[in-house]
Image 1 (cartoon, one colour):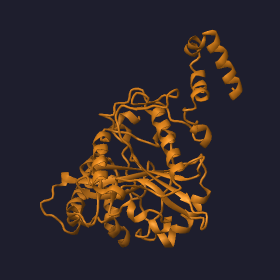
Image 2 (cartoon, one colour):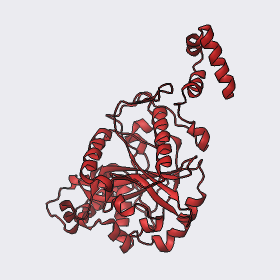
Image 3 (cartoon, rainbow, N blue to C red):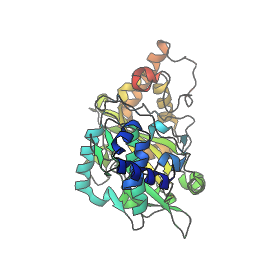
Length: 377
């Protein structure tokens, strides 16, 4: 309905005392009317972006939910952004570590301040738009955990906390996208204090081959990225424990420079930083959403093809890329285990003995993964 029609109808209903009855019997009308009367309703971001809203999960249990098992291993392993189309249901993915991670984020902010949260002048509009879009999304996807009241403008969060978001905006002088605002508590070896105000090629300066192979195409991609085609990608590493935020000047960093002979395999994890990129429809900023996920490497034993594929990458991946990933400190434990598990899978018939390592058809997952994660079946 047009705005004037809505307001005229609302006035007539109030005058006749029929407003409550009308709202009760016309649930589709309620959110439209709320938007017009109180002006605290959120914009319809699915309509503004052309990207569908997610399907609601009414039986979602955040205490038992598992994330999708991202295994972004590729062979041959060339350095590229490996962009994939984002599915509407997976922009913001919640799972059982949510409360633990939020507690970590609060502690990290108290300890590190602007190294994890910061903004530059002129980014406030984009930050608000990002917040609104995120709030609307989680209310649609997880209606039992989150609610936004269009009448009062009150957001109810039954599990508490925020996620990592980084906002880039176009520099009018250079045309390059620059980091302008960020909440990022999931950083190993870097922090937003080093990246704020910098364009993409400087943000990715330490990444092998970025300048030579990716800088131009990524700048062009950002300048042309439409609202209705958000993407996702992942990077991975192997860690001792589950470090969320770790800097080179911290004591724990020293473990990356030695191989501990007593390191238990059970304390080695694959860390995946799963990222999404979306264009905000009003400010035209591009927002990154980061999520750090940790998987015990011992889980790979049951996952077909993963041990053999990861073994190939670790043994034969380009030297500069593997040094950048920094996996040497755990390889003395992981490599023998992967060899053993790959052999077991061949002997059990899970993997053909003549299979040649390559990127899996199910990338970034593995064959049969939904049997292990029934929520996603």
